[in-house]
Image 1 (tube, helix red, strand yellow):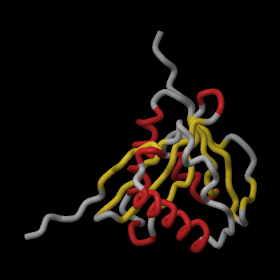
Image 2 (spheres, one colour):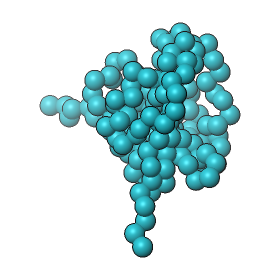
Image 3 (cartoon, helix red, strand yellow):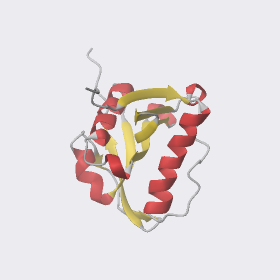
Length: 154
């Protein structure tokens, strides 16, 4: 009897990513954001390699199944972005598990994200609230969202 395959969580800085993993991450982001969603844009935007960036993903048998990155923006605010799940892994709760892990990594600091508008309810379940006007990027409506950091006990 073979054990059931499972998704393994990984967290790494850019310098700790091996080239095969980086390739698989960029491939997944391109498959979904550029090809599936038909948005022609430069996905490798120069922020993946910033020292404060953390990459989080689930993989199974060497295949990246879900991914997000956390960027350190100005004034101690963390930015969650490039949230993506492979087509064959959707519906398994990997996005929610990744977001939960990202919030743990972020800790007490506030965080922001730009959500595709139809996903604002999903992010709302994690404490994110819309904090600006809807806008269209690459033909897709988005809304800026924020999650306040915890106030430290005094």
